[in-house]
Length: 190
Image (cartoon, rainbow, N blue to C red):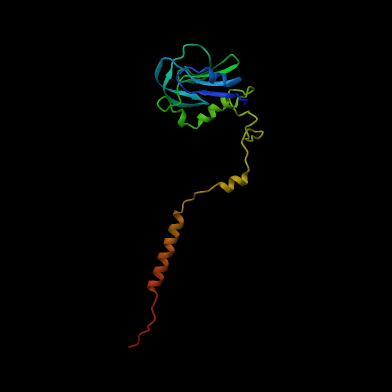
């Protein structure tokens, strides 16, 4: 008999209802991220994420009140969270599709999904900066410190070569003028 381990998170990216097999494959106290169905609304707005605005073209109208995680420019929910039968469920009222929004083209997309994937119950402000797996170093005054010699070794400084070319051109011109006005020895005798 083969023991099958349950997943701690499941992404249901379909308009169809979540199958019972899929739901049962998620461990108790796990997370389900799912698309929501409903009335499609064309929305010339944006998704508010971490102080940035990502273009939003379409969304699904929300018919209930829930804990809002992501909102659009008008305060409408784009991602909500609730807990049902020992399962944390994230309801996404858009799609990971460039026709719906520019979320998949933005580098913030991965950072925004991290709190859902990492599953830190003690995380403040729905962020992953305080997770123990975060390996960044922050000094006492809040600035990120890194190995300065490593940074200096990797840094390439682009400096303009314009002055160097002008000096080389001047030296070539001066050398050519000196050679052209120099008296030539009279090797040929008459």
